Image 1: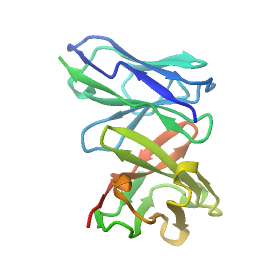
Image 2: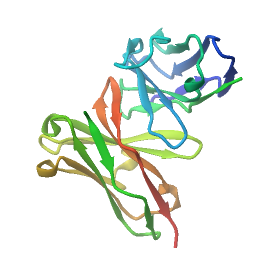
Image 3: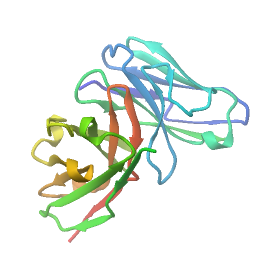
Image 4: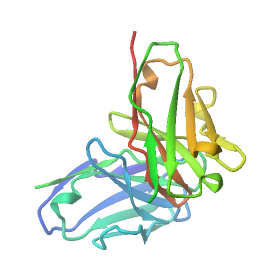
Length: 107
Length: 117
């Protein structure tokens, strides 16, 4: 199985700050990388697909980049509603696998 | 709009089975791939498998073969997942979701399964 390793495990950011979350795949995944945000007691919400495509309705302060085995999610201008846990997920090879999550809090 | 409405929380005894449902609306169910996912506190998410509603074809995560069985009822646009021989390891929140390799754009609200005697 492809292992997805996220870093950091948790971080806190101030209002308006820019933050980045990294995701490292154990092998190349050809940009089949999605990012999700999950809030307590809720289902995950798709933010980014194919590594850098913004899902409809997602604010433009979210952006994704990367290739090969290394990917990142950038959140510009941190807002209170951006608190939550963020996951990466590869859809390149079965079984599809998720990273362990990054908890983002407002400082 | 797309909706995925899952069945309510389940309390089941060890060794028993449970059937979860995911009633959909707002899209063409018969040409859709429906996945099921497991989330345990930690938190971590695992993909269990998908079923193609058109012909009932399935693709399972090897880890869940023999544990989960996916089916659909096209007449009611509902996806189902049977979990068998439950143990404490199966206690989790289970989600249904719509999507394929580009990610899961639509999710159900989740069903909590508790395994206890």
